[in-house]
Structures are given as C-alpha cells and as structure tokens.
Figure 1 (cartoon, rainbow over the protein chains, first blue to last red):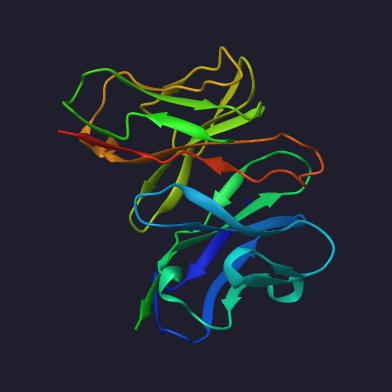
Figure 2: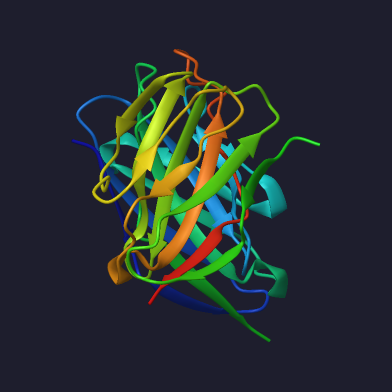
Length: 114
Length: 116
C-alpha cells in the first residue's frame, strides 16, 4: 500500500529565508509524486509533479522538488520565501500503472514571518 | 475556462436530512473523485469514478453515495447526515491516462458542510 508522510504540520520561516517542506513516501512500485498548494478558502492547485525523467522538478512560483529514490523523499524547496507563499501544502502519491489512486499527506501549513 | 464547480460552497443541515452536493467539470475528464478534508488528516478519498456508470469506494465511503450518469457531473449524496460528516469536501477531476503524464487533478473550491 502506498502512503505519504509530511514531517511538520506547521512550518514558520522568515520572509526571504529558505523554504523546506518535507515529504517521504512509501510505495512498492515506482510512484508518481505531486505537490499541491491550498490557499485559504480555496481548492488545491498543482505546484509541481514528478512522473519520469529528471529528478529535479521545477514548479510554479519558484518552487522545486527533488525525487530521491534512495531516500524515498520528495521534499519541496524555495530559495526565498515570500509573504504570498503562506498556505497549506500537500504532498501526494499515485502508483504507476494508470490506476489513479491518489494518496495525500496530512499537509504542512507554511507561515511566512515579515 | 477549465474548472470544477461545486455547489453549495457552504451548507448547514440537521442530522438525518438528506442532502446532495453537486460537482460539475467542463474539461471532458474521465476521472472524478470526492475528498473530505479534516484538520490533521489531510485529504481522504470518499469515492471515485473512472467513467460514466463506473464508481468505486475510496478510503472513507461509509455514509456517502455517488452517481455518475453523465461524464461532467458527479454528485455526492448524504442519505442521512451525521455530525461526524461535518467537514470540508472537495471534488476533483482529471484525465485518465495509463501514462499518468496528464493526471493533474483539478479541484473545486470546496463545500464546507456542518451537520448539527
């Protein structure tokens, strides 16, 4: 069975500081990995995804994530936090093979301090 | 504009009174699903549908029903709502592709349901 673990339900960073949100997955077959962002009172929006190919994936709003198979991780980073990055972030996994069973992590709320 | 539309956005109801939350998408997506979002639990899948007349249970289907009579619509039905179904609900749709390259899920704005 697949699962996703997000370390830290709340993360606070200063404006301009590095953002690092952690995601580890468990999967018996190669996974496809996603990061979604949820702004207050909004639905989820795709930030980036890893399916195949390059393990460093760039997404919208300056975010990127690196798939590390040996560490079963897909951490989300951004070099310099902006106030507008304050939101909740969800990591998600789909198993390869076309069956679209999506498993979400429990989410990490990012607070950006001025 | 590509979108997933849920209605209503907010709903307060009483225990046992049947309700339906509608979901409609205009992207001709085969795959649609319902999630509930609860603090500390993330999003949990309730039901999903891979195409018209094809539905299946997700992780937390108890107390819910769905139907998929048309490709664009996927309503969520609570026959006899209970307070433990108070939650934030999201509908999502995506293409169904064996290559998984186009499986970005598009989410509705959410429906905040309170059952008293």
